[in-house]
Image 1 (cartoon, rainbow, N blue to C red):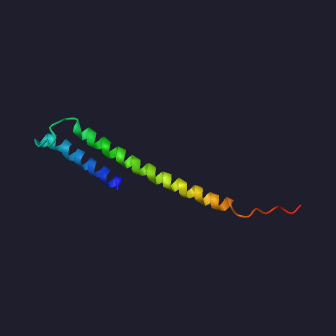
Image 2 (cartoon, rainbow, N blue to C red; image 1 turned 135 degrees about the horizontal axis):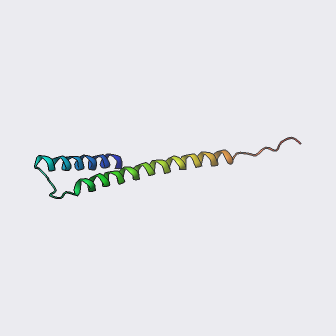
Image 3 (cartoon, rainbow, N blue to C red; image 1 turned 135 degrees about the vertical axis):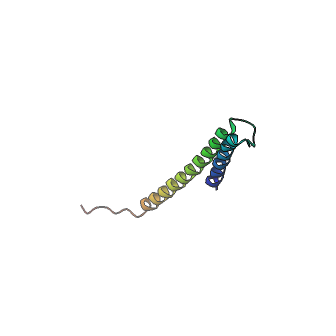
Length: 76
C-alpha cells in the first residue's frame, strides 16, 4: 500500500514539475516537486524494509522449527 502511495507522490511531483514549464504550477513553489519525489522515495523504502523484515522473520521461524526437533546422538 505504501508503494502505491509512493508512486502517487512521484506522479504528483512529475506533474508539478512539468506544470512549471507549461504555465500551470498548482503549488506555486519551485521546490515542491523535489519534496513530492522525496516523500515517494521514503514511502517506498519503508515498504521495502517491511518486506525484508517479514522475510527475515519468516526465515528465523523456519530455522527455529528445524532446531527444535529431536536431537540424535551419533553411534559411538
